[in-house]
Structure formats: structure tokens, C-alpha cells
Image 1 (tube, rainbow, N blue to C red):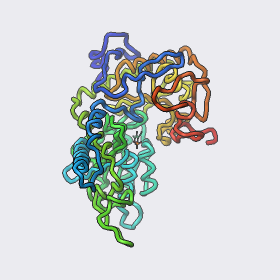
Image 2 (cartoon, rainbow, N blue to C red):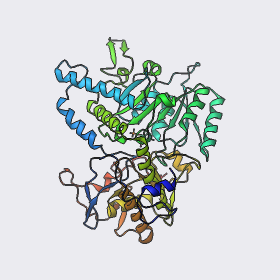
Image 3 (cartoon, helix red, strand yellow):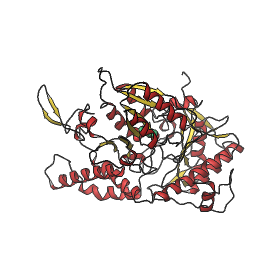
Length: 482
Ligand SMILES: Cc1ncc(COP(=O)(O)O)c(C=O)c1O
């Protein structure tokens, strides 16, 4: 989409840095739960929460929540229950599996394994990469732009080689091709879209390059699948991993979908009931996939929710979805770039069609302070830190972290304008409240905001932001002690 088409589609309000019109009149594409939730500000007012952290976890689609409410009365034990509702639950679970596989273009002989999330899915696959002929662990190639979930499993369970991405997409694909020519690789593990910049590599070409060298491809679809139509069959990719909680179905399920042979032969992901055909005192016979990798009671409601999200996203016109997201992203980048000292981050100078994830820094200000200010003074949720992509942030010179805003089908143009406006005030005047670092997190000093009524919480902010008491969550800036 060009800036011209964006301008035509959007309102007539004043343009930003490069003439992209404001987008306050762009409405969400699909309704999400919580879009009208009010959050308190430090000045005593309440405003609708602007959730611009959907790349981390997206709110439930309204249709997903309705579907979950509908099936909860039908929920009972799955797979091993003889009761009527057990059979209904089993049928719901297996039908969800088919829907989820179909959503990512599974081929007839592909397997869909229900996992907890992308991290689970990639760890599972890492245990299934076949050993080399010399019995060494299978070789896996990764780029240094990856989220830790598509980095660490290969290091732990396979023989991982990390290729530094180059300044351009074209040079990066060449670097992948060159490395694949040096030695035989079992697998190329590559992101569908960067969780830091939203940028994408040309998937069809990457798959061709890998297959020409005899390597399979697993796509980390965590940021791609919720944003773009993706098909294993059309792209030729061998596996895709993705997360329900990033795909508007935050009920604890994710998926790994792809070729059956490795998954049938690989180490069962968890040892336990449901994954086994026969257990003797000293010998176990395992099921083939998917049961082989789904030991323990499965997450029926999570699978149903993810399938409902897949159905809802599949029903959206892809051109409309692309226009919605590209319009919001373009305005966000334009509005941020217009502000003094605000720098938008990118990895490549020629990446096409990035998804709605934008990372930036505000010169002279700690990202944690900016994020705390956006929340406390404007009711805007963004992410700060190193986004579980330490190698990339380090290469970009951002060991101190950055700020990330992300958009999805539930995002309105008004939320984008609120973010740009709030940052404009910050750059011009700084924050109004007093902030300090507590337990490694920027927090409002004497924060007057109440915890939500009915939440059962009695205190929230000082340590909840990091998610850990007295420890870093591991995705934030480099700690002072290195
Ligand atoms: C690109 C990418 N891969 C993998 C993950 C891990 O996803 P999850 O935490 O759902 O396992 C994320 C999460 O942010 C991500 O953005």
C-alpha cells in the first residue's frame, strides 16, 4: 500500500511527517473483549485502555469469548471418557485440531499438534530433528534476529549455527544460501515476522533456498499468523508454530503443524498418559503424532478457542485486513518519525509488507520510563525492554532496550493518535508525575491508581510489571551488573 492510498482511505485531518493523514476515524476490524475497559490515570481520570501491546498477547475476539461460553457447559473429560459429554468434548477437540491445521494450510499428510504456545511448539520440534549420519545432533540454521523461542531450543537440542542478518533482505537471503551450501543442514528455523520490527523475509524465496540445499523450514509464525494469511501448502514451508494468545484466543493453546515423519519418530515431548500405546515395567510403546506429543489431559477449551479465532480471522477479507493494519502502522511510523529524538528501529532497508509491530526509542530517556508514563498518564499499554530478542537488540545497539507498539484487528486509529499525541507531549514537556525505579521497573512514586474493582488484587504495580519479585523477567534491559 502506498502513502497515497492510505491518505485517500483515511480522514481529512492534518497530515504527519510525510503527509500520511491522521487515522482517528479508522475503526477496529473485529470486536475484541476489553476494548471499552476503563483504566485509571495518575491524575484521577479514567480512560479506555489503549492496548498497543497485542504482539505480546492479544485480547480475545468477542466471537472467541462467545464460543468458549457456548462450549463450557459441554465440557467434560476428553479422549478416555465414555460419557456423552466426554464424547462431545473429544469431538470438539479433534474438530478444533482440523480447523487450526486448515487455517495454516496444512497438507493432507501434515500433523497438527496442540501445544501451549510457540515456545512449546519449537521446543517440541527441536526434540524431533533427526540426528546426522555421524550420529551428531541434526544441524539447524537460525538468524540472529530471532525471538529466544526460535533460538534457544535449537541450541539446546540440536546443533545450531547462527547467521548474522545483513543490512538488506536480499543480502540476508544470500547469507542463508551461502551458509546452507557449506554443510548439510536438517532445518532452517526462521521468523515469519520480527517481533521487534514487524519486518518479514520473502518466505517463498527462503523456502526455495532451503529446499534447494536439502534443508526443511520451520516458520516461527507467532507474529505472522495473527496478521497475514499463511499457508504451509502454498509456501512449501515444512512446519509452522504459533500461539493462541497472540491470535486472539488467550486460553492457553498454541500449535505446531507440519510434516508427519519427524514428528512420528521424534522424542515424545512429554512422557505420560495419552502419548503411549502400551507401557510395561521396562518398555514403552509410544503413539505416533499427534498423541505422541500431547501427553496429559489436553486443553480442550484452549483448542476450541483457537479454532474459533482461526474461523473468525479466515472470514475477514485479506485485503481489508491488510489495509487496516498497514494504514495504522504507516501512520504510527510517520507520527513517531515526526517527533524530535524519536527513532524507529528497522533491521533491513528493503523489507516489504511489515506486520503491525513498531519499535522505537526516545533519545535521552529510558524506555521503561516512557512506557510507565504512557500507562500512568495516558492509559496506553506498550512494551519496553529487549523483547526476548537479545542478540538482535544488541546488534542494533539497543542493549538498554526500546519501546514497542503493536496493532491488530481490534486496534482503532484513535489509539494510534493517542500514542503519537502522548509521545509528542512527553518529548515537549516530559512526564508530569514522579517516577522511580522499583525492583528494576519504572513506577509512579506514590501511585494513586486503584486496583480494578472485583479483581481480588490488593496491590499491583511495583513488582507486577516485571512479573517477578526481585528478579528481571529476562526480556528487559541488560541489568546493571551485566
Ligand atoms: C516471534 C515470536 N516468536 C516466539 C514467541 C514466543 O511466543 P510464546 O510466548 O507464545 O511461546 C514470541 C512471543 O512474543 C514471538 O513474538
